[in-house]
Amino acid sequence: MKTITSLAQGAMLLLAMTSSGPAGAQAHPDSVGAQFFNKLLYGGPRWAPVDTFDVAGARLGMSPEEARTALKAAGFSAPATDPTQDSWSSMVSRRRAERIGGKVDETKIAMFTRAGGPQGEQVEVWYAATEDGARATSIEYTVPTKRMERATFTSGVSAKYGRPTVQEAARSLYCTKGEGSCQTYQNKALPHLQTEIDYSVYVVKLTEGGTYDRDLKARMAAAIEAAAPRDAKASF
Image (cartoon, rainbow, N blue to C red; front, side, top):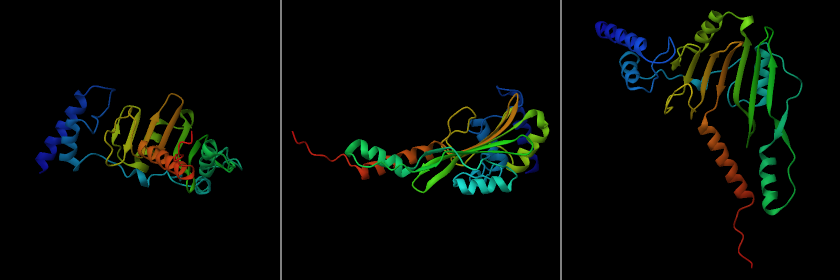
């Protein structure tokens, strides 16, 4: 078994050296070659437990109050109030009023929380309006490169999140198991985390995928239809 593993590791290295793309890039996990070697070496693709990840303590699905508490515990501070957006009930009532009239609910919820850290870091937690109130759907952390060495950032990412699904020269991507394709530049259906080394900032971004967005839109459409169904009879 040791010999097989050594041969497989050597073949994996050869694959990485001969693959096209940026220097140091690994083959994408959905390629035939990567699937074979990942199966041989690791029992399957390098999927990540993204649903357990946090960025500066904030997690997907948190309410604004929960996110603020987590950010404060991590040493970040935010303004006393957040910018606002229409609540779920407000959006439903507005569409209902467009169809059949009636009073519009004017309630608001948080749109995003922006918090700063002691070393020039910044975290933005963006919320979606749901039936249960505002819920975090995107969390992005940035820190200026002038405040942190590249090696410190990359080692910190590795220590916190482990081995990525896809690793490129300046980016790493962590995908949830079951993702149809885990390519850095493609839209993703499931929750994912991406890190990036830019010219002026280091970035860590945790995001809900397209499935969440589609489900949320479908639930909104159903709520609007229930409030003001298109069941009028012809009266002309």
